[in-house]
Length: 490
Image 1 (spheres, rainbow, N blue to C red):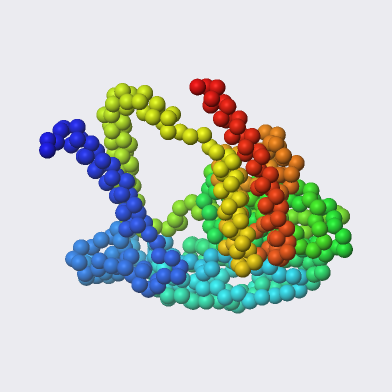
Image 2 (cartoon, one colour):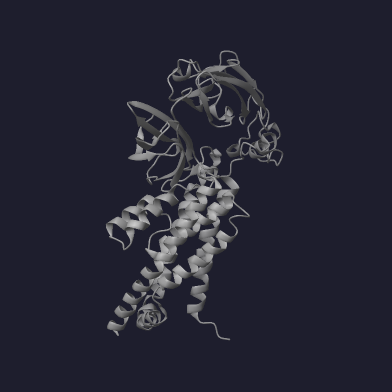
């Protein structure tokens, strides 16, 4: 079989593109991976800094020097009294690279009623290269609420040590969300442990509970953060209250906010509220706030989540590989352009045939078929409802409804139910007077825990069945419209 020059170029181009795509991933996981808190620090950290000690090469970029690896780097020179200038003089401050430690957990978040208290155990892991005497202190905002067991903690190299923290409130303290930090300081290196203390009023007529689903507590810029809101109305009748939802940073600056006036029935009122985070949001901890105002009185609660942007720590020797990463990415771009130019002429020649083929194979979406398939899936879920009423079941229900509406109205699957309501109102969708209240009922269904008793959720299912069947007439009309439009073009 004869192999032409074009085939060789194509194969070589694909090979180089594959290398350019795979190589960054290999380098990332080999050189940029940091052991998690739950890892064995004594094993992971030693392999990071002194894993090659004894190989005959003094590798300064991975932390080898005369003190950590005298086998390769030789003995450290003896200090001379009163040593003069230069970098070899004694008595200087300890290099920052030798001081590194982290808190576990990396945030304290607690909800208390006025007058309650609770103890928390905090661990400090030493991942540096010297024994630490950590000075512990509390920010001024929490001075009357948080108390430390001791103010100094000795932590050996590659070791850990723990201390207790008392969170205590008085009967007279204002019910509010209090933010602050516990500081750990070694010489001029300071680490912060964020503290979120949510204090609620004893016997309050309105009580708020904000929760972030566990799988949504670590997200990335541009993603959707979901807040599970439970507002308990302890009055003996329904009330209309003003509710404000917001995303705030640790300095309590408002990033996003929304204000609603809603009717709160007596007892528990469950809601799912969503915010689409901006792409430019700064990584770090944020709070999902909910505040209810009624009769000139405010009730508030918040839950924390973390926006992940990039790893905070990495070996210093990795910085020397930025040029390699940039070169690989540049190579991938150049090869992609070369590949496109090589086949541009062929693509233009075959464009007409390809377009014709796509037009013939493209089929108009059958909305009636979409409705029928959704009803079939819903019936299967409904059959299993009495046997298995769990968070997995609720998750499947919400997923099915989101999939149906996204396909029927050609929306992105990441839409919020609030966006769907606004969209239906904007396009003046048929039968929206019945559909919009139904959308509101779906938005109150949480799929991370059981927010409703079985009878309440049964009413949602009955409403779902009615709405889905009402879509059959809409789907028929929509299919008929598109079929006529397609026939007219022909």
